[in-house]
Amino acid sequence: MKKSNSKENGLNLELDENLAQGTYSNLALINHSVSEFVVDFINVMPGVPKAKVKSRIILTPQHAKRFSKALNDKKDVRIVFCDQSKAFDRVWHDGLLYKLKTFGIEGALHDWFCSYLSNRRQRVILRNACSPWGSVTAGVPQGSVLGPLLFLIHINDIIDGIESQIKLFADDTSLYDC
Image (cartoon, rainbow, N blue to C red):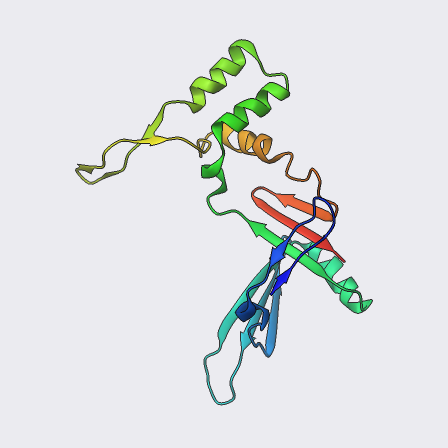
């Protein structure tokens, strides 16, 4: 089964038939703190003392309020949560350097960023053993002051062409319409 959006620049979603049937859950447990709402969907079986969490959704308080209001108002709710695994390790160096130029970073400063990102190598040392050196061809140095800034520069245009509402937090992106 394939669901698609016919709008230009729309998001096409493919939904596997097994996934479309859903996972049965007869209990939703909601926990929250100041920074997040956690909704666990659980399948509880009578007489079985242990229940398994089938799915978990983590929402910001703003998302949770919007979601709750839409449900109370009997509106349709569509939310897409995107989380790119190892996002800081996937930053494309050439693309990032291009974006730095579009922000007016040129000359010696641009050359410095090229040097900062180029010819990086890494290895693992465990006890007295060392792995061979490997080239690092993507990503921003983690644990550095510049790493998060360079990552944000890399993803700053992710919202271009998106017609739904969008929330960004570090490497997490949420698209919603409710």
